[in-house]
Length: 99
Image (cartoon, rainbow, N blue to C red; front, side, top):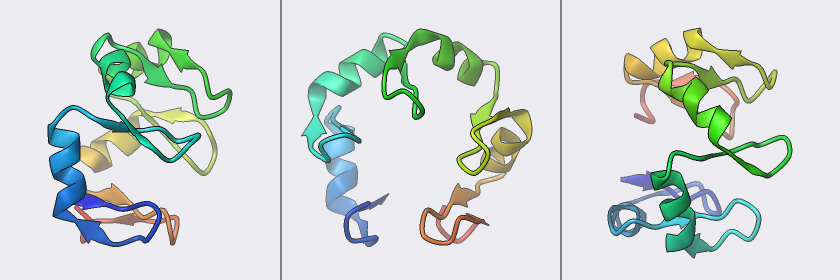
């Protein structure tokens, strides 16, 4: 299942869209297969500038994760994700229940 960022609800339908190789465009809110193909090429969205950046992906490949609160890259956040936790966008906390 996948979180619907607009309603905050969990929806299996959104996951099926993702399974078809589509990705949410954070700027427009629309689902786009083109964004996924960019991701498939090893690029990642820079949340600060909005630009696509292959360098960010290489950081992620090294096991680091963006801290949405501070904007810093942190290997500790990735380890939390590895344990099966998820960032709750509503509360701003890590939450194992979401996963």
